Amino acid sequence: MTRLSISPEEFRSIASRAVDLLATYLEQLPELPSFPSVSGADTRRLFERPLPERGLGASALDDLDEVLANSRPPGPRFFGYVLGSGEPVGAVADLVASVLNQNVTAWRSSPAAVAIERTVVASLAAAVGCPGWAGSLTSGGSSANLMALAMARDASPASRSGRIYASVEAHMSIHKAAALLGLGADAMRLVPVDESFRMVPGELDRAIRRDRSAGETPVAIVASAGTVSTGSIDPLEAIGDVAREHGTWLHVDGAYGALAALAIPESFRGLNRASSLSLDPHKWLYQPLDCGCLLYADREPARASFAHTGDYARSLLEDPYEGFAFFEESLELSRRFRALRLWLSLRYHGLGAFRQSIREDLALARHLGRAIEAQPELELLAPIPLSAVCFRHRGTDQFNADLLRRIVARGRVYLSNATIHGRFALRACIVNHRSTEADVEEIVTETLAAAGEI
Image (spheres, helix red, strand yellow):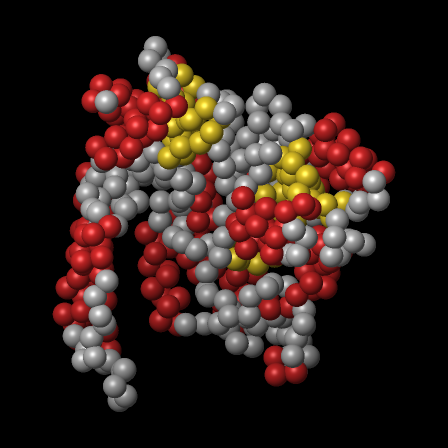
């Protein structure tokens, strides 16, 4: 055995110890604070220590207690970001995937993993109303959006210039993608939104016509299926009409919201009119990070952008299924076995269980909205089309900023913030399979209690 080898007995021992620790952690999770009582100095003292020259053996696991104690728990009262709750069956799958250590780049390098990912991708596409679409799993919505806009750019006659149209509520990853693709910040055309924070199709059409008149070329339209601040869903059918009228690539950023199409498909009519769509199973399918997805109606633009295969990677297999390679449709070459967590989790619980859990999150958001409206000291700042709830105390922006810091410091619930109509907002986003009505009611209780302490 080499110095890095361990016996099956040693592996069984350390894995069992870790599983026991994590099972206890999950048992305690509902009562843990929403954020650890820890400072930067604490984490530097605990973890920024030189790594040992001589191995610690099994005692290396002793500090896992400190890792758990000083991490933000994925508990039922974490409402800070659009971040899934880490479904445990998916976590078990991650251990299996890490031991297998497959590079899911081509069928010949990982036969089972490639077949499972293709199955999962096809199933996700059908579940959101885009049957027959292809795609791949990614690290998250940012990489999926980048890949989609690379495909749009390469399919455009203005491959190194041109314009990208998105609403003023579009996610920052769209702006980053424009920069990374060499289009630059000036490529972005930000389209106004209506009172519900949805892109106005007429304004989109006018913006494209103005640019065409000035000799500019549209590269892509980006519609949001769940904006990060308010969960607003752009009018996809009307935007699809504009895209068709101008012959422009339509990408839908559905990283936050599109998976809610499992529960409320009527809110996502027109999704299948897009050229590409991003999803994040590590948000509303509750999977452990990282697990995003890019779907597209046609494989050819993906291959045109990403199939730059060197001789060392070229397949000699004659069977087209066995010759399949994700690296010919993706910017990634080395790819983790992300699909195993989805495949195992969806098979364990069934798609219907996830559909129901999403419905419950949507209902919890509406319940929270009603609880806020019942308090004269608080006010809702935006509609609640999905599960993001933006509200504030009827004080100044500074008071609300101080209030947010105090809420987080109290450790009962974790909220984030947003800017709504120029005002500082408290924001709760419910994408957590563990949350209950009592948990979301705690948001109101904690907000009022914290306000009383300021």
